[in-house]
Length: 329
Ligand code: TRP
Image (cartoon, rainbow, N blue to C red; front, side):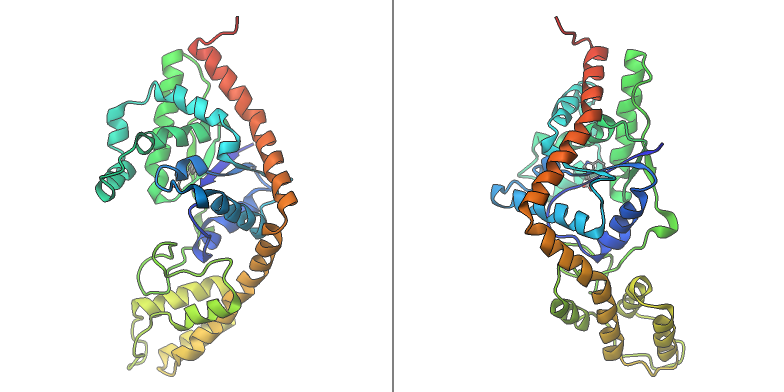
């Protein structure tokens, strides 16, 4: 059976783009493959070192994953730092990770450029820690976006190098997993690119109905079509793209027709879109609130998750120790 693993850095709330891009697919996939979902708090520390907020951010992601339908009795969901074996595997893998190849990683160069005053060693070894996350469970498939493909490629380099170096066939070559047609890219409300958490163009899963309505009503449009079948401006195209994800085919056809005949009123379009987004988000938000407040449930979920994760990680780390020559007396 496939072993699927996905990690997410706890740096804020999840938005509609996270939901339609990945989370909803994770929920479906947990029944077909052995799935590990973890919250990469060690990774977050390479850029977000605020001790006052880290725990809260972890709790947010955890509650949101559970609210969206990740089932802790089916999948394994855990917090990275609850499984410190990953730190040992990362250390061992780092012995065969070359500084040159780490320095050439696009994400590292990007961080150096943007933040020249905080080029810490954790940033440099970020891909090694990520490889350790993946190889700890000997994951065969890792769903990643474009920005993480290079990290996954390095994971395969490290796995292959380890296998060759020690003459073993131990680590798999983890493949990127693409959701194909199920991957829905949600654009932002500001008429530019995709929905993000820093761009301030997103709708969060925890947003109230009122906030959703306000954000949608403020979405960027244009002055309206003046000729039949004129092309869509970026802002209006984005609104239709979000509609494709949340609205019924009839609704979408109705507004497309109104646009084509220049009869569209963007106010009506946005009102409809807001209500259709609310239909998706409101039930999730209500579950987020309930789960967030259930401390004992959350405690049990992370404890059980870490315990389940450790079943495979203990095996991997002791095998790697043995292969590398660390032997008990
Ligand atoms: N680097 C990933 C990101 O920023 C998060 C991550 C950490 C991850 N470890 C992972 C993703 C292992 C997949 C597998 O999005």
